[in-house]
Amino acid sequence: MTEVLSKQQTIELRKKHIGPSCKVFFAKDPIKIVRAKGQYMYDENNERYLDCINNVAHVGHSHPDVVKAAVKQMELLNTNSRFLHDNLVQYAQRLTATFPEQLAVCYFVNSGSEANDLALRLARQFTGHHDIITLDHAYHGHVTSLIDISPYKFHQLGEGGQKEFVHVAPPPDIYRGKYRENHPDPGAAYAEEVQTLIQEAHKKGHQIAAFIAESMQSCGGQVIPPAGYFQKVAQYVHNAGGVFIADEVQVGFGRVGEKFWAFQLQGEDFVPDIVTMGKPIGNGHPMSCVVTTREIAEAFGASGMEYFNTFGGNPVSCAVGLAVLDVIEKEDLRENAIRVGNYLMDLLKEQKEKHPLIGDIRGVGLFVGVDLVKNRERRTPATAEAQHVVHQLKEQNILLSADGPHKNVLKFKPPLCFSVEDSKFVVDKIDEILTALEKATGARVGNGNKEVVENGVCKRKAPRHSNGVPEQECVNGTGSYFAGTACGQESACHTDNHVVSCKRIRT
Image (cartoon, helix red, strand yellow):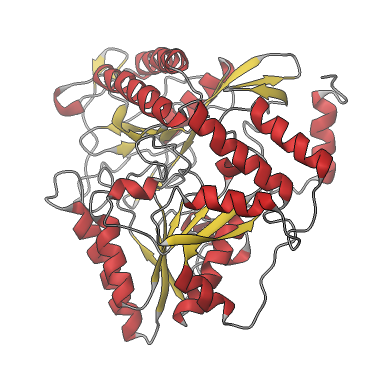
């Protein structure tokens, strides 16, 4: 492919014509991608990058079967979805066959945001209620209704960002949350937090329309819900007259390997009332879907308001969707997610034994998180270090990201064609980066990781507050806070220039 514009021209035109809040990866030195195939992306100089984060290209970038299906249908017909067409009903039939039988009715739309917005409408119409329970750090989409229920976004607005009808439950995080891995039943404990929110809402005269959660939290830091959590939450929400919405936009379509949908990992006794999806459904083609029960669909129709979506479920989108399902089955990508995901987890766990910066490895299939910490006992987030790793990997042509409340969790969500060789390659590079980083900062594993070594000298631990957090605990290099403690120190791992400084890092 011939490049039309130079990279600098592209950057200048973007600055001139694209809204300034539309950010790009690696803003200091963005990558210009001109083509991609499988799990690889190529820039204008034909430099190849290993894609570890692009869950949009679910079965692989530019998969020939998906491209062929789109072109073939586009050459024949693409039109308003209010005409009859076999692709729509055939795709709905294939898609609903992957769900429990109760979930049998589809609404096709064009993005995950559209899907979640429609899910809220369905829930409110069915229940006659308005309030929504969401999880802290959750992200459900960019439209106004979803910013309102996405703490990941509305917390950025400061005081007044949270609407009165939105109730925020703690994420069921057994590594960083209130109830951890040593709790006898963290799933039930976190569900009780939801029950408490319901009771408090009722005291104020509010009624719950829905509880919405990603089946596994992505922006929240690759959080895997503990066993029994969704079942108990669904029980409390149903008793309150609400419905359960499972957001599978980032984790559906076999990414977890063992099951087709991540919510199914909770067991056969749990079935959401509404499921939303997007991103991987079209392998990069803009489409999405809401699947729900017949009862909820009929209540929505009984409102008297017709629902239609001009492009949702158009013939080309449905042809693409059918092709994606075919590829997942033909190439046994769920089994690949299990095999490669397990191998990746094993490699990362080996690195945890070597590197004190790795606090936790968690994941299912090809949905994996690496939680970096300054101190394993206190689980202090290593924010600057995580950003350093991401930037250093980029310099070695590996694309990874970091997220979570403290931006310290390395996120793996690669195309499902990711291989064991890819896993070994990226983990070896992470090993090299962490080794250099720990050498530069003098970090090492002592008894319980209590010890910090700087330039070969063991340093005394900082004085502590009553909550056990050192007075000068540093989360990142921007004056952020952790456990109410300000950090006034410069980060030792600022990454804009990809240089590891030897300034003090307290662990």
